[in-house]
Image (cartoon, rainbow, N blue to C red; front, side, top):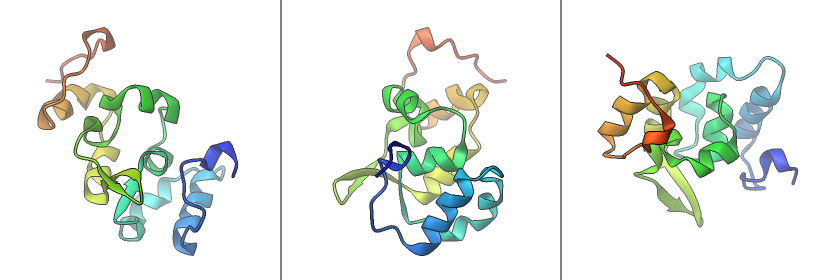
Length: 120
């Protein structure tokens, strides 16, 4: 499996594979926001990041506050760390300027060195 999809299972359902291909295409993944009903029930970090765009997998893996639910509230499915799609959908709209407030919802402390401005 190529490095780009190293965090995905090999038996991906066709509709999910189609979504991944759209994300990888030049058009980006913008149209996918309209297809939330096709998201799997449980979503791994790599797939969530492909939908959202922005930060890299390695950055988010090292900085849990950049993950869905600020790295909290995850479960294990098939031995993989996942978040419920409702939480991922909410996280898709979180930008860095909203991250401090979002972290409060999940009771997660963001390191001072991250230098986030409090929104509002």
